[in-house]
Image (tube, rainbow, N blue to C red; front, side):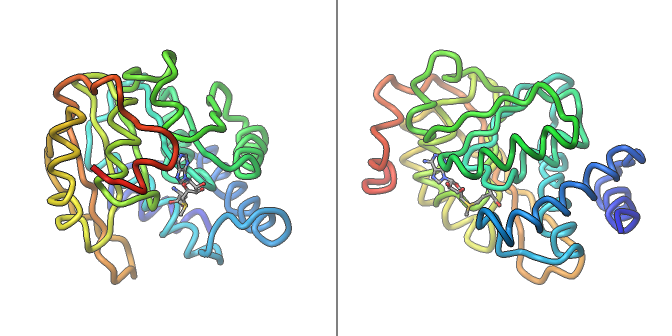
Length: 238
Ligand code: SAM
């Protein structure tokens, strides 16, 4: 089954998956299905082909939107079952990855998967983004912050930008509302030190809905009062 994933990764993103990486994706898909049925509601997407395309390929599409330098520090905010962070770490073992997730049960799943896939050195952070953004070891420490299906752009920018160093980038994975949401985030970007770099369309096999990567450059420091207290960004978006 991972032959299909390997063929798509090669064709769409020019990535050659090794036999070990293919085996890791196969194990990951199996664990996702097993935990989804019994322990944690991790994803509405089920079936190997859908997992391969809508989770794995979609996640690694991030690499076609931004240049990720060797050894880059990447934080995936609201990673849930590990998307896009974990597939990115599988295809790019050099990444220094932090998986940030508010729900403890999901973090337990992620630790389990990293363990059985033998992915060492991943940092797990069971916290809210609003808390992590004030922790000295995380604030403005990352080269790249990613997020998929976490919040609308004005809110998401308050989660991501405080974590990124000046010169770093945020990648928000969005659907058809990408351009509209990005326009709505103009005020948040201005306050938090972000600037729109580009919106990159992504085409996945047999997926009709449009996918986009919204790439934001961090161009100025985020003022100390941001992010605001947990829940405030969502209740009162900038
Ligand atoms: N990114 C994954 C994906 O695309 O499959 C999960 C998406 S899921 C819809 C949203 C996840 O974001 C949930 O696991 C939720 O717990 C997490 N989340 C939402 N708000 C958050 C916050 N402020 N800080 C940390 N995690 C958050």
